[in-house]
Length: 408
Ligand SMILES: *Cc1c(COP(=O)(O)O)cnc(C)c1O
Image 1 (spheres, protein in one colour):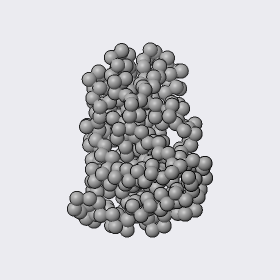
Image 2 (tube, protein in one colour; image 1 turned 90 degrees about the vertical axis):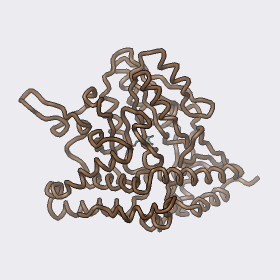
Image 3 (tube, rainbow, N blue to C red; image 1 turned 180 degrees about the vertical axis):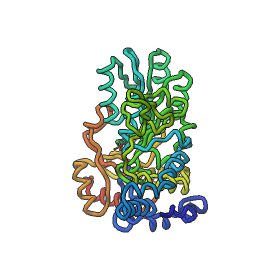
Image 4 (cartoon, helix red, strand yellow; image 1 turned 45 degrees about the horizontal axis):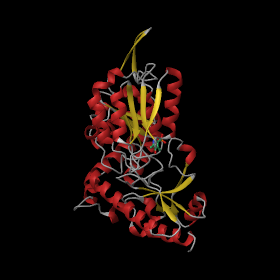
């Protein structure tokens, strides 16, 4: 088992930007598709693919438990790589099978009491919203949706006013929503939460891997994300960050023989690091692969990634907006790599199908997943760029859309 060549990855970040040719050569999928569905699942780089398949082969050759013993350095390296990427300590990281469960483990651990308030945003992810309402019903908690400001992102004035009214137990928002190119002002939210001593849970599923995300700068108490999206890790992986001095206050909703030690027939002790939110059985190859993906992103540089992704998406947005019949839907003062739009007279699902036939991957957003968002349209095309995409690939999408858009 060999760790990926960090030296080689560093070479791709040589100079002041990312060496696009090199990262594309390092991404097998780039040879076969114009992949603009990175908010769905990005193409993994070769070191991630190799790390996962090597471990699966090792398991097949030597046995799963035996392979685990042999790969200890890589499974432990996961915590350092992920912590390094988001500015956390390794003890604050839990490996979880996806972002939803990572978020759940934190959310359901919050000791809500009747009368507590949860504040969220209009663009909150569907699964999170469903969980809010389950807990609201069971524990007499209220869920309040903060309005957007004039730019279309979460209103900080409204947040400050609601925090001042008291009884807020949790502020739970997304950094970047799944269905829009906006970026919520997470660090300003963190500052307001810290000033009032309110817990802050950040769903960073669409931001980690495309934007520079630092838990200290943001000031969140808990952060969840997935492996397969902009991080370019394996599917079926994710992680949870929980601030260290909060760990003992948060009792996980589920425990097992890994998250707790059975100390007497009727007694147990919960681990005091973030692994209290993990389970023993896991996709070990995925854990190794996710660690490699985190290291890969860090080696390229999260600032360089953010600059490249944001720039590509801004150019795409501009070209689409200039196309007759196209409506770009992205809101927010700050925008990211996600570009959402509709084409007059065309169903978004049809657009996705036609684009797929031409070797261009995009996805479709669905308003039934956005019931808190007054601006959500029934369906929209979502094109999400990563740093390995090129202006030529964006051009392919734009010319296909021009062809399909109604002529004036
Ligand atoms: C995709 C997504 C999730 C869920 O991630 P999974 O890994 O599929 O559980 C949560 N929040 C946002 C904003 C997402 O885009």
